[in-house]
Image (cartoon, rainbow, N blue to C red; front, side):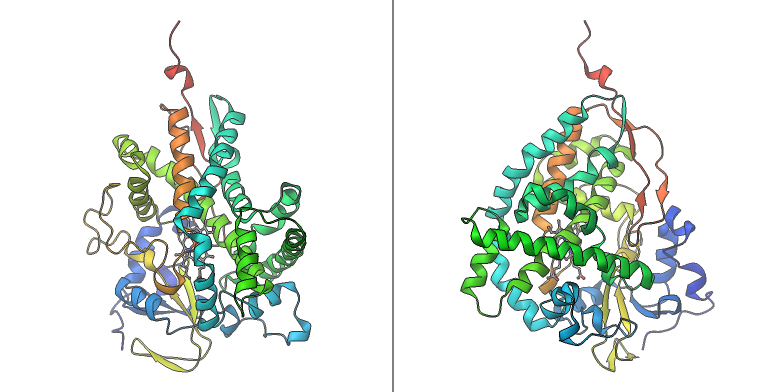
Length: 421
Ligand code: HEM
């Protein structure tokens, strides 16, 4: 049984990731939650929250809980198969999120499509596009990094990675960014429904792209690889391909957008020697990126799981369908976990490094995410060595799952780096 913390105000009064206070200071709220014990009941979200890293790692590794949104007690009822729209077909029928056995099959057969070698090839495709973005930007005195650069990067890399032809980009861009909202249990039903409609349109477009690719000669991209895998593996079908592409776009788009903003902000907000250390090599950037995330604490809700049946879990009785949130970010400023947590040190040692998850559901796009971030941030500092924050950015409370900025104005100081005539 988790020992209830004594003489503390109810957790609902001190922890609310959707509050303006959390926007400005997530750390004190995260520490207040972690102080309550290893598994804390959070009334406002009707959820248990896992606060300790050891328990979270074990849960990631052994998967005692379900990742299927439709197992949530408050999810809309799982409709019968004859009523499935595209969205249910992708999310229930062949889901990465659904039963563990099918998930393992999908991960196993698709692993070659995410190998280092493939990421190298994708890098070759996205590098010129990133340079082009900066060329289009030119040398302004000031610019909004989110609008001019960050916003475009996830879309560029994922469409190039998957192999979605350019003619579909405007259509798909409009409907794809909200995909992860379709299974966020902490937002309203209306918001989830609108995201679901967007996703249905996105699936129509993806189906068109697949049909077109089937009739066209094989190309060197992820979609062609998946179509080959489909032929070679029984049990892996078009629905899996659609789900995977949606998951790549969904899981890869907003995470990278958040990562872009925080990487630039953290590097400019701290000592400049950190920039050189962070960007020395792709490997040093990988470590720096863990520190950027730790220091910034941008996460709001962590990772959702659901009790698959009435069960005992960490000494508590869970009712079937109850939500359990894994909250690895609660440790990020805990002095008993990290020495001098307020200090930003890109050479800090992360053991374990679990920023991209762990175990069977470890992030598929981790290598791509790190590579695209490294390329973009390196290009930024190469072009503008004297760049600085033009203002302290205002935080945006409308994002469903992360603390982000409304805009990130940067001052390039280009004239300082031009040779004097
Ligand atoms: C900075 C960027 C990123 C971070 C911090 C991140 C982090 C994570 C984490 C922690 C998980 C595990 C979630 C859980 O256990 O519930 C995950 C899963 C996943 N990520 Fe990422 N991710 C990032 C970028 C990307 C990109 C760029 C892609 C695709 C191109 C991607 C695709 C996925 C997919 C498909 C899953 C689900 C894997 C599965 O269930 O087997 N992610 N990510």
